[in-house]
Structures are given as structure tokens and as C-alpha cells.
Image 1: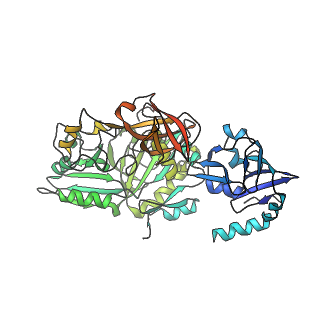
Image 2: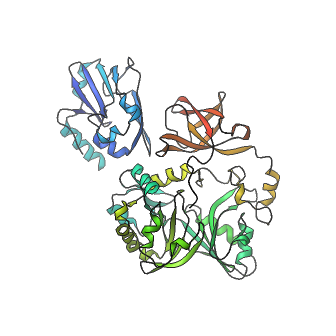
Length: 129
Length: 362
């Protein structure tokens, strides 16, 4: 399981790259492995404002569908259009070309609740029992 | 209740199989990538452990007569060594199970049945027993492997002296595979050329391993339930419990070709009444709008809920989401459109010709 140092993580298996007042968001390597082959990704419209914990889209694999949740409240400023034609990027490059959305953060105090790579690895191990 | 394990349970785990419960059995849903497993079968060769499937055997002078009575296809039309897709039906003409009937000879009929329905089938066939015939549940006596794909024959031929090229589609023979006595049939549930073999459970592991050695150069892969489900859906082969069940008849399911009114069988009377007046049909559809359709999703026509998807998923061969659904006959023609509720959002879909994939008959 790959967990890049520079990212922060959530219990819903999303990663965030915080860049000032903005964040790029995707799902983790562990999440894509659990899902299996991703065949469709549904993303929100740019400009949409969502609260932390709200679903912003879904990832469909051969097996199942998973909702993806806002790790922070904010407004969507960019979505990864590439995933419309090549959703498999989520499997091949979950932290790179498989990113999903970029948001403008509404409340930066929420960042404190995100997990470090070490905390996330521990969380995944505990979840697996 | 703990799930039953096939003789290959260990092998699946060794090969990274992600094990799930299916029809009371612990089986691999996929090993690595279900899409890769699907491609291996479509382009080269894949192997499925289908040991969960049940087997019944009718033995005795009246075996053929009993088979004729309890199945809707015509067993008399079979030669010894020939197999046939068929069904057990209720008196209402609905599916108790869909099956493959193997005519070993007129006094010995072997029937492959679904795992979840094996006990129900067995009891039901027993209840129709007439004359001199024994009904046996042989499910514990067999492991079953499906070797499927354009390279299947070449791979399996390396393990047997039986001339596989001489076995026609839906014919079978007894022969040794890796020195083990098996029943080899040119059948499958993928639409590809291929074989299914029935063998003693104790030999399953070694034959399974030998198949992977023999198929290594073709990139042979073990294939799990997810790949199996996609492959059969692309061919519009119904799945018992999803697309066919005790609420639907073969005429509604588009399986009129397995119903032979020239003979007597349980369910015939009701089907004769339904014939020519089939009100709903199991139809193939593809998504027009984006989205992936799943089993159970609601189907709307002109704002009214008319049905639920019986099987839905993503077809790697077509690059789109497809499914099966019972719709009123007047809405079942290619081009008819409707909407599917994909988690709160209505998406356009349209009926297409069956099957989704056109394959050359093996």
C-alpha cells in the first residue's frame, strides 16, 4: 500500500494535497485495490459547493459502486476530465493522473482533522483487523 | 452457517483469490483484475472452478422417461454422448432451475444443476419418480472446471489423449485428463470456445495446477465469479435467481427454443396457454447516458416504474454498461427506450438485440 508522505488522508480512504487555500482530492491506493477495476467515475459540476461529509460523486468498479465524500467543506474549482474516458487511471495512478477534484477550502480549521500517512496506515491495519 | 469449500479453496487463496460467499459456497470473486480475467477468456484462455455446481443422475430403465417428464427440452432428440440446455419447471411453467442434461445412454442421464437449487431440484425430481429409476444427488462426487477461451482446446489437449477436436458443441465424452477419469464436454457459460470437465474432487488440485502449466505460454489466468458474470451477461445467458426464477417462464425469458411442445412435461399446460400471448420479455438493454447499471435498479417508462433490472454491469468488451430486464412485450423491441434510476438520477437506456456480443458458435 502506497501512502505518499506529502499527502493527508481520511477514514473514507481519500487523499488530499493541500495547496494553500485549495486541495486536490482523490482516493487512496488502498481504496482502489479494494474496489478493483474502476470502470466509471462520476464527478460533480465545477462551482458546486458541498459540506464536509457530503457525497461529491461515485466510483464504479466491475464489482460495486462506492460514494466519494467531501473530506472538507468547499467549492469545486476543477474536476479531472480525463477520468471520463480513462477511469482506469484511478487504479494505475491513484495519486497522480487518477486525481478527482480540486476544491477551494471553505474552513481551513477542518484540515486539522485529517490523518497523516502514518495515522492512515495504522487506521487501515486496524480496519483489516 | 459456514460456507462450503470446493477442493480448490486453498489454490484460490494461494493465487490471491478474494473469497466471497456465493450460493452457500466460498468462491473467488476475482484474483487480480476481473477485467484482465475477462480478457484472458475472450482472447486466450481462462479457468473457472465451478465445483459448486450440483450434479444429479437418473439411473435405471426408466431414466429417459423421467428426464422427459421433468425437463422441458426433448431428451429423446439427444444421441448418447450429447448434451442439452434445458430446465425444470413448476406446474405453472416457471423455472425451478435451468440445467444441462447429459445423455450418457437411455438408462443413465446426468444433469448439471445450479448450486443454490441442488437440494430443491433433487427433492423435486424424486417427487416425480416413476417406474424403475433411481435419482441420485452426485454433487459431492464431482469437482468441475471450465476451461474457456480460443486457446482452451490447445491447452486441455496437452493433458489428454482424447481427441478434443472431435467433440462437437454440446457433445461430451469420457476421457482421461492428466491420468484422471473425467467427463469432458464442449460446453460453457462464456460464449467462447471451451470445455467443462467433471472430475473426482481428490484430483482437482493436481489437474488445476497442470492446466496452468499447460497454458502458461498463452497467459492463462484463473477467473473468478465477477469475470464469469460479465462474460455470461455479454452473451445474455440468464443467471438463475437473477434473470430466471419461479416467477418467470422460459417463454418470457426468451428461451422458447428449450421448450418442446411435441412431448409431455411438467409445466406444459400453462406454457401452452401463455404461448402467443407473452406479456413481458427478458430484454437486453444498454445505457445511453453515462452510468453503470446494477442488479435491482428501477426502470421507468414515461415516469412510471415498470420493472427492476435483473442483471446489470459493465461490459469490458463493449466499453459500456449493459443489463437484462423484463419489460412489457410492446416495449421489448430494439430501439425502445426507457430510464433507469441510478442512485437517484434517471438515466436513458435503450433495448438492443440479444446477445450483446455476437460470437461464432464453437
